[in-house]
Length: 140
Image 1 (cartoon, one colour):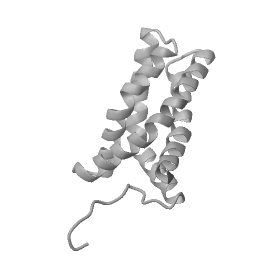
Image 2 (tube, rainbow, N blue to C red; image 1 turned 120 degrees about the vertical axis):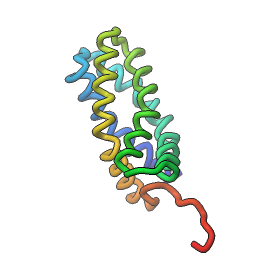
Image 3 (cartoon, rainbow, N blue to C red; image 1 turned 180 degrees about the vertical axis):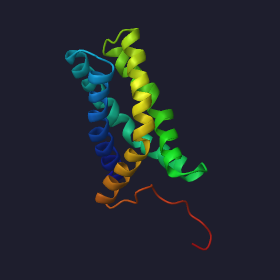
Image 4 (cartoon, rainbow, N blue to C red; image 1 turned 180 degrees about the horizontal axis):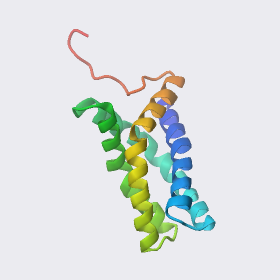
């Protein structure tokens, strides 16, 4: 339960702000569209926060490369389809959708690692390891 709460708090706080800024100032969505998008996004964030945390932990443990690349790949691959659905349901037309996805891609490219660090920080506040449980190993 602590992992669910930590991952949910981290995702909701980080991406409510990021989504708002992207939708309003990059995509040019109207205030009512932004409000509706954030309203739709909140329950989806609650439902997907822990699965994303597990996905990120898997990517971080299994893929080679620097944490910056792994965090970014995990975030892009998991969040982009969800975000596209949110923006479409909120009423964005095709040009707004394309601008929102373009802007969100840039946001995710630059926020993958900061979000990974934020998630780790929030997890430690809940008494959890920042990058998820470590796999069991012999002799360790």
